[in-house]
Length: 456
Image 1 (cartoon, rainbow, N blue to C red):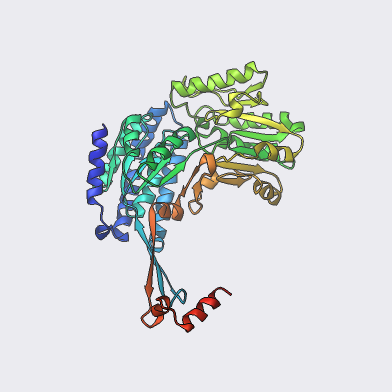
Image 2 (cartoon, rainbow, N blue to C red):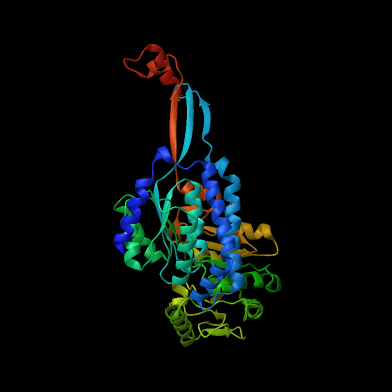
């Protein structure tokens, strides 16, 4: 399999040249073909993802995968001519001339995509990379094999083999991709694996975008309403059975209102069951979540389960755990499953102290006073965030999406994604005249006066 990776990379690298970067019109045409293929293969893709998850709620695949991608495609196609245009201006310093910023592709870029949103998180960075004029080597997750097969067939239909190549397989294939000298490497996954990817890429000085995760908090300030705000927290927590990198990992609520919040969250969670709820990706993920819940129960935490019919035996009911032990896995690991931890506080300042030093991918604050919530959010460090909402900042394609610290670095979506996969090349053109002579020794008295004036 590693030989297939090298062969695909050699084919893509051999086809890339700054003399032959696809013009903007050709990139737009390719992206339009991708959109048409996604629409034509909608049923096939929904079935593949459902098969991998056993099942994935069809509503979630349509919205969080297909609709998300098609909206992002339309945004990119509409704005690509403007993003690609060179930026030019006249300058007087250091000497009169003209400056240009040429936006050029980086070359062959690698994308290592995860299993939790196997279509969206593979094709959204691919859209940005193709829009920037790159060749793409895509390695989808081996934990969603049916989706990987369907996606490879779709890509083969849309792109020539020297523009985009898909390589499949396990960790050894991913390792082979990270060992390549790439123009850029884009990875979405866990923080632990992200560190390994960054270390491997450092050997070839390949620039890396890391979209990781972390323990994203939600904070219900004293003015928040369980009736009005719990449904949005619940939606973010149990979308895709919690297998979402920006899902609220835990929610802080006023100590006096814990019971009201738990009741409201459980009520909202029951709305997922059974038709709009997804299963765990596999038995390994399911066993891990069951182990985390059992550990919290043994430590004396209160466990609340949203009762209702589950879509399959591979599902775990939406679960709320109140104030688990501080040293439990639910309090130290990213949960990444259908469990929401509820933590109580007496003073909102205590929440800020507890969250100090954390760098999650997202943070959410709720209050009937949105301005007060925004002020509180400004004091929480995170890659992105939202006020009186969860996850939705991810769906705004004109916002950059990315992490900070342990939740990653770099960003994409919209213009930011185009820039992530581009090299911004700075070019200075000197105006004809005697100006350059001022920079050449021996320096004249006039030049020395100019130098002194520049330091005033």
